[in-house]
Length: 346
Image 1 (cartoon, rainbow, N blue to C red):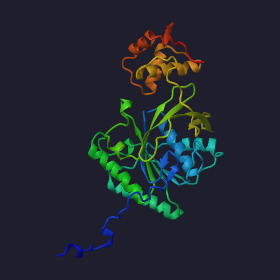
Image 2 (tube, one colour):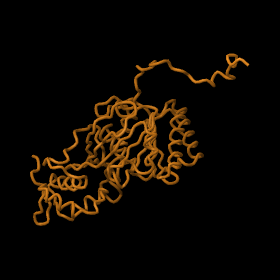
Image 3 (cartoon, rainbow, N blue to C red):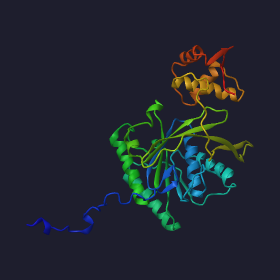
Image 4 (cartoon, rainbow, N blue to C red):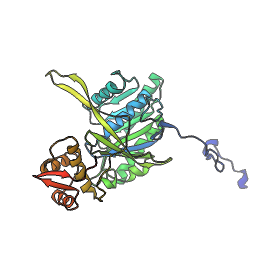
């Protein structure tokens, strides 16, 4: 038989071939230009207490509202936020954001699911997809962003096993393909923050973008946002975002209820060490904790600083040795058991 006479049974069984550099001038489509691409998979990770969920909510609210974020253009799109930990925390955070940036008004295109969805269970994944498609059809809209907060609450199996993580990624890809939305996963960093997000590297490899969030050591509450992966374009610059407390209501006991709000305007991150002396990571963490309390004119007692570090999730097992090293380097001094920074920049 002449091979030239063999024709495909169906036209859609052949691959579409693109000639040379055809399509090179197609522009990337963004939810937030320079930060969040459309129809993609990405991750924001950080330690507990690093305010990563507050930051992601700031992104999500800006997208649902169609409001400019950090000077970047935003494509207005409905948002679905899967609050895996449930409770009243997420709606209060959303209300606080609306109080600050939307005159206290609700955002019509922001929706939440206040319970975890098991991404390892095909039935629940398909139920989630049907829910999204039903809402899209009922409202004649298309979701642009789906947030999973957190991976741990929506994960089935062992995060360190590549097979289990592959199953989670496959579920994210299935949702992305079925809805056309960007899927953003909120995840925790490992014990060693230098090694990135916790668990199997399969997740990071599958991501189109990735951001690290760490707690900023400044007089006000803040976080440092760093782009650690951008698949198709250059990484955005590292910036700090402050957090403000916003009053919500007075409860039945007469107590004021409030929540934190992450700023939509970034600024240059603080210098880690103004003395010019090179410090190790643990030394930077201790130095930053001291500086934060000094800036607020609060006590900087030896045990107080240690307690601050533990509350922030920093695991410094050799705390006394690190403090001693800072003293020997002439970066801090111990005055009546208070740790004081030397040559602090004005």
